[in-house]
Image 1 (spheres, rainbow, N blue to C red):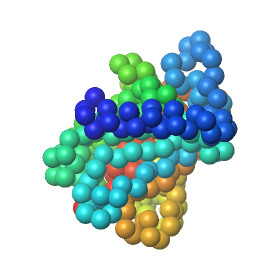
Image 2: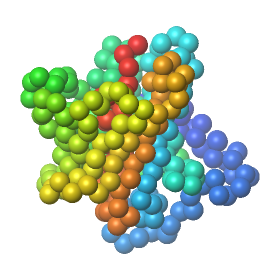
Image 3: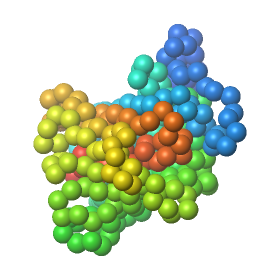
Image 4: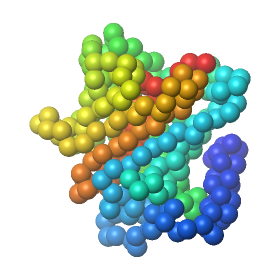
Length: 250
């Protein structure tokens, strides 16, 4: 991990110890190990929706200096499930903006890394079917569980969700106007037969936050019985959607 990521992990662990004296319902109670379930993803077996809240960085608001993104991942009751920290260098963040490659490390409430999301650097263009976006999700780190692949389309944002063997499992499709034309923007989670089973929603965060920051709120809805590996992939897909459509260039 980079120095900034290590500092973020240290802060999370300190916060976890400090908040341990607060009511336990702030945190989702962990499940014991489940056979066949990647370690750390036991949380996901009992949820059908997640809320992802990007933290507002004061230095970005005041100086326009792009910092590593940080996210809080909660369940529908507002309990903290995971934290996510982007790992990147300063030059890449400032020069490449939202097009940048990144590694996002998803940590549990005890600061243990349970999901790694990796995006290589590729130029995005809606007019050419080359350099399409790709995301790899590992859970736990070192064990690939799936991929998110952008599909070329002249008008609609489309993605294919693949398993660890690069076999298509699900599809993801956004609206014609995916750049926050409306308060809420929905990306439908579809089966291979185009049946909607959930969605990733960019939620309206309020006028001031939308205008002066690129800090966004997202909601993910999926079937309760969806494979936890695919639930982890949907978390990664949410990060990719955020960078592609809702991050701004300073």
